[in-house]
Structures are given as structure tokens and as C-alpha cells.
Length: 474
Image 1: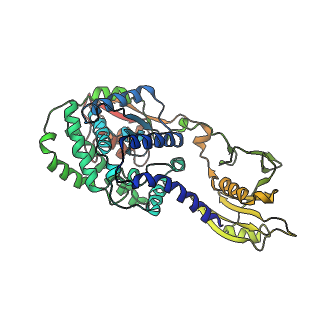
Image 2 (image 1 turned 135 degrees about the vertical axis):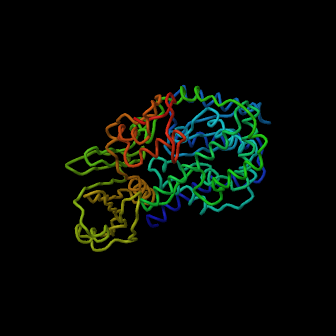
Image 3 (image 1 turned 90 degrees about the vertical axis):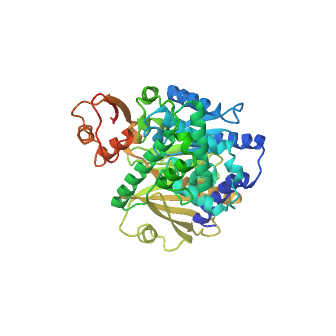
């Protein structure tokens, strides 16, 4: 079985595990709770949770206040902040609501946070997961998960998300229904329902900014619940939500901007390097800045410039040698630099932005084949060679070789240094404050002014008034 086929098999199993519960058109409350608990354990074990007790408690208070206004007020909901800079929020059956730290940084008030949470609560109370009629296939779920994987290596470890609904949203009709229900929950809870429109507006602003930045850098636009065409564009959402919930949106209510400012002062902005402690069963090379994971029954040591891994039972070994790479592709490197003219099941591959090649070196005189993989990273070629000692365990060992090889990834200097992340702080504007001036002073880079405008609700134009509390990044 080739390297890529094995990886696809793993994805197929994961996607089936995720997709099967969602195929049931009717789902009992007990089943929803069971699925929600299982997904919560998987999500929180594979995605970092933002460890800030006061902010988490604040989110719970907002969430509980909203749940009390729904038909499921007697049920327990769980609210969790995912430590990701991405702008996103999602919900899973059984009353589990997740909000990314990155989205919170763009909000201006407690009412806006409540609008996000109310929208996700609505997905739960309307049982959108169980009501989805559209057939799902393992292939389109895999595509959705891979869309997440392509965005972040760490988020890429979250392979047990709630399938297509989590990634794509629930489709146009259900997303709009969640907007309408969310506006009702906001009004009943005493929040200003207009906050729902405010959130959609800021998402639209961010979408416009991301499109411009993506166009300038030649990459694909990535936006909240807007990765796929199943979700309505934010300008369309504005029109349809106003049309369906116009009277509700006119109601007065609280914004609680001061409480929100106090709760979010010091919120991490961007990557949270401190949130990523060294992982068990992960080999780190600080000098060359790479890492790879290995099963619990393996142990790796460095000896004379070669990294050697051994299985605890002695049935297999995996050696990692580091060579100077050439301009030739990895397949040619194997022939020219390693002097190996032929490998069986020869297969190119890529992981992240790294290019590689793998195959089997034919064994001599009845000896088992050796697994070979070459990965190009910076100026080096990383050459993995797996040797099977116990031929009766050949397939299991080769799967473990590929698992270890497939986990190879770069490490940034920031990850290694465990540097202090950037944070959002609040300051009062003066008569002379401008976002361009602040961006230059804070050295926020090419898009610093736009980022300050977005997180303060002033995109694309406008300046803060004297005495106004505004967010800065430092």
C-alpha cells in the first residue's frame, strides 16, 4: 500500500466516524448529548483551549443568559473558547458551543459576543445537525477537514471536528434561520438585537479586507463560515436578516461595552505561542527547527549526527539522517545523492509546504524491504530509513514508519523561544489619535492600520474621537 493510499485510508476512517452520526435524520436528545460529549472530548484534546478563567467564566455567563430564553432553558450548555486566531465559531449537538479567540478580538461589546453565541445556540436548539437532509459523502467531509488542515499545522491535528456542518456552516437556509432565532434570543435576554447586524457587518468588513489582501498575495480568501458557497454572503445576510427580523432588530437593549472591555483587556492576538507546551512523544530539534511525533512504544535518541528511533520490543528501527539537499527533486536525490537506483512503490508526496518522496528499498537475500522517505526542508534533505526486524509485524511497523514520517514539520523560532504573544489592550484616544499613527508607532507592519480599524469597528475609514476607548495590539 502506497504512502498516499495509507494516508487516505486514515482520513476515510476519521471521516466515517464523523459522518455516520450526522446521517441520522432523527436524533434523540440523549443521542445528541452523547455525540456532543464525545466530540467535546476529541475537540478539546486536539485543539488548544484558551486558558483564561475570567474570560471563560464571562463567556459562560453570557451564554447562560441566552440559553435561559430558549425552549431548552432547563438543559446544560457548555461554552468553550478555542485558542485559535481564526475568525470562527461553531456548535455541536448536545449544547456545546465553541468560539475562537480570534473572533472575540474583533468584537466591540458584550451584545456582539452574545450575538455570535446566540447564533450558535440557535443551531443547537433548531437541531440543525439532525435536520440536514442533504446526503454527505466521505469525500466532501474530507475536503472540508482538509480546508482546515491547510490553514494551520496545529489546527490540522483536530481531525475529529463535527464534519461538514462545522466547517461549511449548515447551508443558506439554516444559517439565516439561526440569525433570526439568534436575534430573538438577544431581545428576550435584554441585549440590543441590532448587535446581530453589527456582527454581520464586521464580518463583511473583514471579508472585504481579506479579499483585498488575498488578491495582493495571490492566495484564496478565508472568512468566517464563508469558506464555501453554502453560506450566504454577508451582504445578502444583512438584507435577509433585516427583512425577516426587522421588528425585533428595532428593540432597545444593553450593549455592555464596558464589561466587554474589562473582560477582554489582555486578550492574546494572533498566534499564542505560550499555549503550546511541548508535546509528549514529540521529538524537537531546536538547531534545525523541526519536529516529528512518534508512538508511545518508540524512543528516539541522537547519535553521531543521526537520529535513531527504536520500537520498545526491538521489532523495528527508524533512522533519520540529514543531508545537504540539491536542486534536483527528492526522487532524483534518492538516485543521485543516495545512490539508490530503484525503489518499489515509488510515490511523491507533500505535507504542508514541504516536498518529499517515499518508497521501499528492495530487501536482499530474503531480507524485508526498507521504508525510505526523503523530505526537503530549507537547505537540507531529511532521509528516513525504516528497518523491520520482526517480519511477522511488517505491515504494522510500516504503518508506524509512515505515521512518524508524516508528522515531520517545521518549528518557528517563536515556538521554540516561547516568546510572549501580542495582546489586545485598551487605551483612550486623544485629539490627535489616528489609526495610521498608532500602527506606525506600534510597528504593526504593512496591514497594521487596517487591522486596528477592523478590531475597532472603523473599517475602512474614520478616526476615533477624543476620550474614546480603542484597542491597540502590542
